[in-house]
Amino acid sequence: MRIKIQSSRKGIALIIVMLIILVLATLAGAFAYSMKIEMTLARNANHESELEWLGRSGVELARYVIAQQATIPNEGNYEALNQVWAGGTGGVGGSNSVLSAISLQNNQLGAGTFSVKITDLERKFNINMADQSVLQQAMTIMGVDASLTPTIADAILDWIDRDDDPHLSGAESDYYMSLDPPYVSKNGPIDDISELLLMKGIFENPEIYWGSQSSNHPVSAFQSRGKRGFIDRPAPIYPFGLVDIFDTLSSGRINLNTASMTTLQMIPQVDENIAVGIIQLRSGPDGVDGTDDDLPLHNVGELVNVPGMRREIVAQLGPYCDVRSFTFEVQVDVQLDGVTRNYYAVIRKGNRPGDFGILKFYWK
Image 1 (cartoon, rainbow, N blue to C red):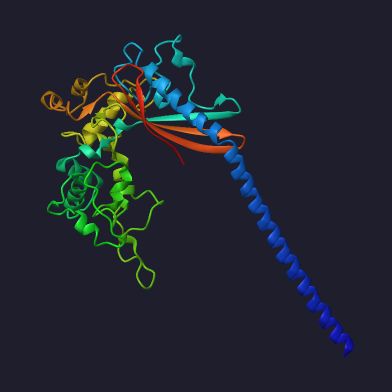
Image 2: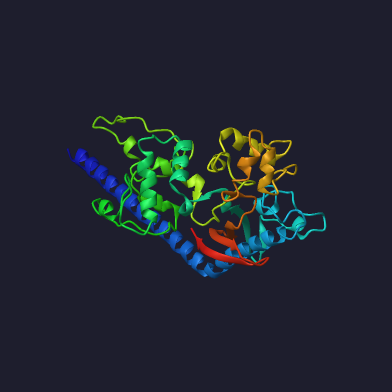
């Protein structure tokens, strides 16, 4: 009996020792992880100013490249996807051009490096300038149900206008204050395109904002699950979202040389076939945007060369489209001593050559 009791005690002691070792190992791992985080935060804090100036240096490089592009003969009166600012290799103006020696990728500055990506905002339509017909056209080419289109269009117009009188299917503050949590209608221009997610008809159906291909957003009402875990009804499929065709800072005229086929259809009298024709015209023999053989449009009048585009229609399109871009988003990817950070800026051309205003600068 004593032998069995001793064996039992030894077993219990072994279990206790193992539990103590497990607890100590867990505490040591947690402590090591905490120290790693503290060291990372300390390192980031030490490099804070250097990281920011690397980001600002990338923005200055973007401003310089766009300004130099505008000085090249026969290249400076339009913006296109084959030009250096957009990541293309064409439009440098000759081998002695300063642009031929400039790279937007992996630029060394001190102990850090930065890469720059420039995107013009005129490839989208400014939602603050959209009227009822433009918004309805957007819903139509997205494939939004016709019964939902008036609600969304009116809600957007109500959000932007300065009064508290709702359109027929729209919503003002009295509607939004009844929600949980409550909030008020802005009654002013949209500053960030994500404000659309607050509006009637869109916050219930976020796929209309994101597009069905995006997964990094809340589940919509269409995708809510019943008691047994099954989807109540299938979610509509949208090939793109409002975020893909609208912005808040562009000039209001769509750049024919940079806009997607979808955005081109926001122009009055431009259907899918004509949009395809515009892209085929500008992309040159290889049919691919952003390559050396691109043939960008130098003016809106060249739309007469697109099959199906009548001259009298082209003459009416001046208020809706252009071949210029004036507002650009700049993304600067920075690396310094193992630390990476992404800076963003929005810049806009001024009235004088090389004059740019920085509308936004931030990191995330």
